[in-house]
Length: 243
Image 1: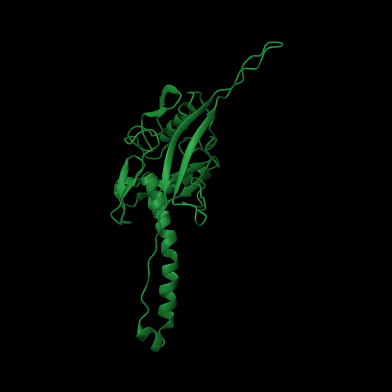
Image 2: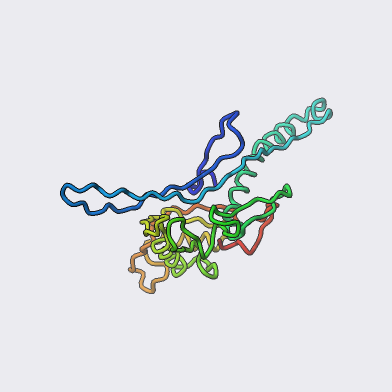
């Protein structure tokens, strides 16, 4: 997830607290007509929603026994330490993946028994992926999830592209031009292979004529995120296979 291109990484310097407030500020898109000698109109600025994020610390320790140290079991010691060094990165990857895996929920309970909030800054009942998102400076609402959560197909992909082009706004309700470049999936083999057909075929995968151009060839960078379909304990949740 960290290298996927869909998350941002921010370092937390020492002695700088354990919370960060993130806020959005929008400027209207279009300038106004200005008559000769007239004062230019003041551009509108809209403070959007804010969200406070709290950091947490993770870690594990491992036991090195007397027998390991005195009976030449150093290969086992090295193997344990090497595996231990991967655990923090794997936990961060799991937690980041849950932002998508639990994106349609307002919270989830992690493997430590803690409640993790996954709402947006709008209300405590608005999930990251929702059919009705509010804007701070407009009565317009938007959605960022497809109805019925369809599996990958040309129809589903075009529906998502239509959603992006028509349902991306700033807080004034002005349509924003979005050009997505990443297509992410779980590691479900059927889903991965279907996406590869769409992005790598020279001819249209759905076309009866082999000479039909594949309009999706190299259109997106495919990122496989295997931990999206895991539950809070790292076990496969089959209901998320096709995310």
